[in-house]
Image (cartoon, rainbow over all chains, first blue to last red; front, top):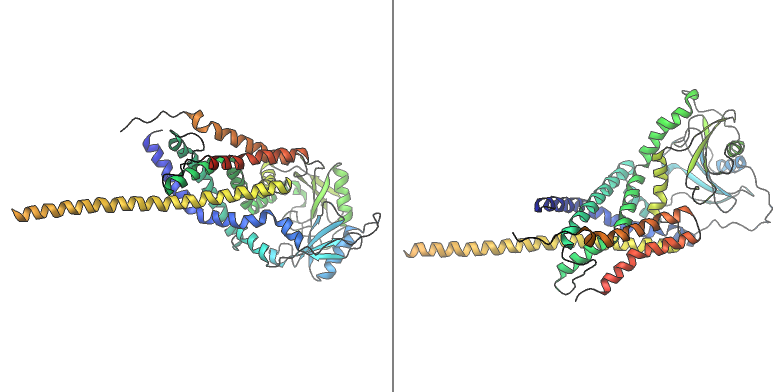
Amino acid sequence: MTNRTIRIWTVIHKWTSLICTIFMLLLCLTGLPLIFHDEIEALTAEDTLPPMPAETPLKSLDEAVASALATYPGERPLFLSFDVDRPVVNVTTGPGARPPVSQMHISAIDLRTTRILADLNEDGGFMHVMLRLHVDLFAGLPGELFLGFMGFLLLLATLSGVVIYAPFMRKLSFGTVRAGRGRRLKWLDLHNMLGIVTLMWVVVVGLTGVINTLSVPLVAYWRANELAAMIAPYEGKPVPERFTSVDAAVRTAMEAAPGMRPQFVAFPGVRFSSNHHYAVWLKGATPATNRILTPALIDAETGAFTDMRSMPWYMLALRLSQPLHFGDYGGLPMKVLWAVLDLLTIVILGSGLYLWIARRRLVQNRRAQDNHVQDRRLQDHAAGEAAE
Amino acid sequence: MTPRAPFRPLAVFGIPTVIALVTAVGLVAALLDDGVVDAVSWAALSVPVLTTVWCWRKRKR
């Protein structure tokens, strides 16, 4: 590598880092409690399931939806999702087909009684503030895309950091930390060591974070292309006045896909369905396949099966980017490791900022010294001339 | 300009590459199955963390 190449990569590293660091610090800090959001929310959980005989028959999904609508009169159903390990469904309702999230209501409903266990509406509490700061800075889609761009800069900073790691380490063995020769050298070595050691984790969490920020445009693209192709015969048809049984729609979908289980149902007109269909999103039954969703479309006017297609690659990438970003797929020990790696990332960001400031000071001092010497020379020169 | 020490990719990037690959295995493993595979993930993701501890403990004062 020539000196010029190194200089170019150093400039790239400096500027991409400087621009994104403050936002990355915010994301690391807000991300920390979010890693443990399940555990934190369990502390304040209000929706414990009352004990009932194990063989208690379950009510139909339609009765669950009716129960939610009775609580929020005038609204229409948007989504229905299934809890994994208990007979509970979560019904989302809202004033129209695509209201802002703030106007949606989510009810957790006991399927044995159709009683509402709890509402999961946004409450403006601590975790909600953390989530919004982390996802979109309270600025909606533009905020999301902005943070995505900051994540892209982080990836550039990481890449350029790896490139300039090489000239730094030419004469040093791996992991050297020179702690006894000044603060700057110590933090430089720590920055390099931490950066290279956490590299893969930072790249994966950074990249999946960027992909997650593209969720809205990716789903819109899928709806406009893949979904549009699936429902071509229905093009231009309005949202039906009345929907057929959602219970029957789920059963029809499950018959069409033996071995798969429903994850959620999107009602006609919402972002994850067509105007005319129930989209029953099915997942595989094994750990390796239960993250892969396949939508089955059921005509919401007749109850007939319309089509089922596996997701295109970009939707799979979006889907897999969630666990890989959240770190919630390997139990509590994984979450703890996620938190430690997050803290190490904070140290990398902080030390990078410190090194930039320390280096500027160093350069300024040197320049001041040079100027001083030059002034002295000029003075001597002037004095010499005056004497002549 | 003084001649620089030659760049030896293996010496500089050997260990970091191994750590990166182990981390990648840890990240993917827990996605594929539950149970034993989770423990593989924990062990693999401990590698970057423990390496940090090791580097800090043998720092030159």
